[in-house]
Length: 390
Image (cartoon, rainbow, N blue to C red; front, side, top):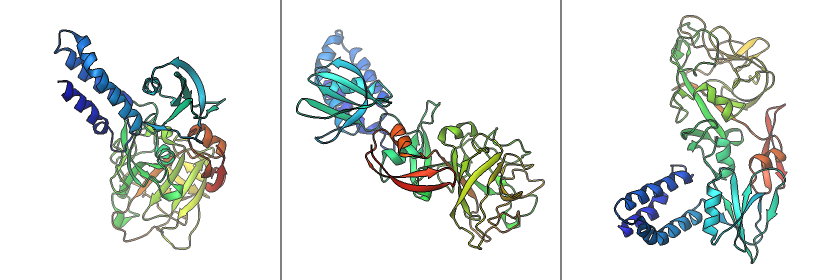
């Protein structure tokens, strides 16, 4: 029985990883506890079980520390954080267990058997590994909360599916991340098609599906979705109440209209607030010499929200198949200037909350190294590459 449990513990570290490679430490500990409870039921003296399992447990914890949950820092690398706990420990593994119990622990250092827990926050100091100090940095202290987290945690991450844990929820979800357009780090929250693309200006044409309640006060009769789209070609929408947790900046993509990156002003798409927005052209899809960008977001133009410039529609997400039609006009003239003859026509909405300065990057992602990063200019909705010293 001992060897069976040891083998199971040793191999479960890989088996319990989710598809993105982010470990959820609590799931592993729960798994261990379950195995131990099964074992103790088989013996009259539970203490004997612990006696046999301790070597295996030590090996398993060591696997946790060495396999990606933590990374050992070498000479010249610093652990920066707010050191808030000092405990006496006999091993580095024991200190790692203390760190793993805290969501905001970003690493730990053991100095002459004293465990120092590092948390993200102001008044950070440095712990420099030396002959008397062993320091570890926590690579993934929790699931990422958005694709932007994935971008900063996984340097070089490609576009595709990742698991995130949206703030305020208790269950990870799989989302699609665009890691190439507009500097990457965009979470797909809505993908839609059209009910009558071939007769675009017909009243029977609308976008479908549409997001859930709160998205608009307009009259709609098309399908409402709360199913997160797994890729740009799969139609669906994340529940609208969660959008604000992903980010306030939005990227609108379409294969029949030009694509824009927009930042909120008095108007906000995630807060369902009409008002001014700032947008920049990301991709000239139609290529008809129209480079007009919208500058106003309106939550209800009768049958859905719209992106507008000079009272003319650029994007109109009409969700009613009785009157009106879903304008997708790159010229912002509320006309049929969209791209014609497209297979699988539709559009996608992505969200992100890009930092606007090096200080924001350092605050949100305290473990990133000094180097060049993209920061968002909210006034012009464009990116600037800057060098950040961390």
